[in-house]
Length: 359
Image (cartoon, rainbow, N blue to C red; front, side, top):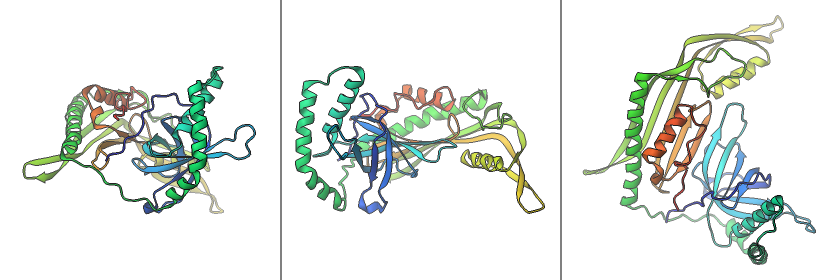
């Protein structure tokens, strides 16, 4: 059976709770300690040093701050799927978006009631009586089941059976083909029009890096043959080059030169350097030479085992990387219009239509 996450219908509260990510034992990854950046009854945002978590199913351990009269925080365990990953130059960690997954004896009821109480307190309203009663019952049930849950999660994760029907595979394949047809026409028009990109790309301390315009782009689709009469599309890719039509020659004193070098590396810009050294052998100044251009890419990749699509973007609508899980049903002409606005730098994100979750 394909797991589906909960939709982020509710408000996100900017709560900084201590948290940890526990991976299935087969992955062999250690416990990741972190803090939440926001919380809602259906999802959360966290930071970690791992950049390859998108699509992973993890156990989120939330340390609920102690209530009045309590001495220790209460730990809630919630199964979650990592549905997005983003990082921009200058960030030392990746930001991950988590969608909670309903499971037996999880902590979602307690979390939902707690967040409702926090939100009500912030607005001066009393939480609903039903929610308070549910929270009380959930806390009692949780206290009884806590030892059992700890034992259950300590055991190695068992392999999950995935109901992967041909009909669902074709749904994913058709959504990729729809995206390819749209992007191919989109790129063909841009290769002729070559529009300017007035915003979205900047390198701190390098004002010369500007005047970018569309240079060239291409869209491709990759498929595999399932049978002599059936081919399934697995991946759609878009690659494009923005160019300012000039080279940049710039020098920086140490240690500013190291910061600029790190920014260029994070942005995927190819460059050459020439150092100036003191008589004592220490680096005093570095000269950088690089083209005023940006290489960008976007991919939609089939996730046949989960029935979803993975969007991977690099230097699209600005420097940095982005990964996002979306439903194949969300790939429509309207949502692809929003995606094209993101590619052109006219929108800061993928757009709400593409991010719809189908339960």
